[in-house]
Length: 165
Image (tube, rainbow, N blue to C red; front, side, top):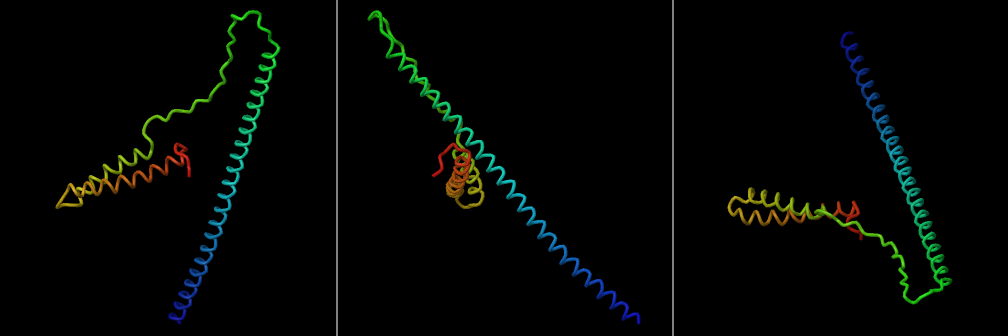
């Protein structure tokens, strides 16, 4: 009788464990799906917000362009109606405002990555190649520098410092 009770409780415990484990797996999967849906909703709202900002910036730029054209037309119409009284007067035309590009200061991320990668690669290469440390340093420097350049160039593209292809 005791053996039968022990087997009964053991079977009951294992079946509860299996049922609980299956229920948790389903719950975790549902939680993961809900999290993915929420992340997609957030990303979509961020994209929509950026589109709205871009649209408002485009409209503001068009308004500025329109105002500049009207100002130019008004200036030209005034210029046609003006009759100079003497020939010694100098007319000074206002220079059109030219937007200046921001100067890029400092090292780019690609240059930083190359320098850091080459330095670390040379050090590691010298440590690894025990027989000819110079050869190891050169090989490690080349590999580290190229890897650092690739990572830095990607970062420059993402930040907008370098135009994307």
